Length: 354
Ligand code: NAD
Image (cartoon, rainbow, N blue to C red):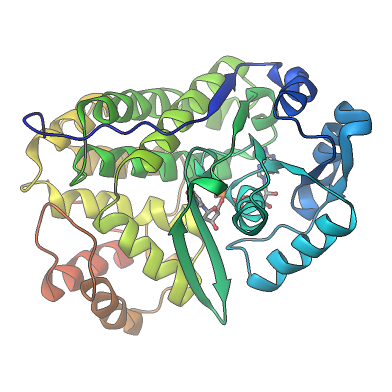
């Protein structure tokens, strides 16, 4: 990776730290937005109302219909509502689902999105959009959907329940792990990825015990920023492909699926990407990357078996077929037998052997 690489940073502005939500109105005005529609899920309506209040006359209201995986009907309803309200920009307050809705509107309108992330999923740092139609998720890259400003205020993450914080953090770690062996990786992305894993692994276990600790929440959100940055900067591999298939075809929960699959994807790639694994293990403070990831997931009280997340044993061959068809670039060759073994281990939730 060191010998030859391309480095192409994305544009964007990041405002980080406890209390930075106070700067929202200024940031929105700085983009020339006069009527920002605040987007959220139904559960986060109260937070979004507070955000709208901070915007005062620059708010076009709150739209609380964001749901997982951005169904096309939800995106279309939001676009219509935004046009009716005369919105010229969007403040997405929430996790990947809410930010995804903002991206779906921006994809068509070209209007700016300001993201205020409240999970560790990382969508706010990427130009990747996703839309679901008839149970099938389509994704693409378009710079128009990349949020122009991201406000990372860790005080908004204190309410994220410990169990969700753990799996959301593992989702972020997955971006970092795959960035370390990405086909188009570069030394800067690798630095960020390793630091991201260390920040998340160093804070998430403490958050389980004390979810209100702002210092730990700050460190975790810093890790999530790094993770989102590398997700946006370099290509993902086998792990993300598997999670995409599992989420898309079996409708398994996003962050939980990442958590269960990651140790096994790392084990699968261990021999083919030794330098990446050394860096993952170092960041985790573990002997082995794959085992360290598995042990961290357990320490976070996460479910590590796909069979407990709604996958049936008879789904294994179908998912193996789909993962083998049009695979993403990956350090170890992606074979059907290899996928069958990997998926069985993840389905059972076994600790990787090495
Ligand atoms: P999510 O956005 O679906 O949020 C999960 C739940 O947690 C929701 O009910 C939400 O309201 C609630 N929640 C969020 N923050 C909270 C907080 N601080 N306090 C209390 N409740 C809170 O989950 P997610 O894992 O962030 O996002 C998953 C979605 O994002 C998936 O559809 C995934 O495909 C997408 N995603 C996209 C990208 C990308 O680059 N396009 C990257 C990562 C994830």
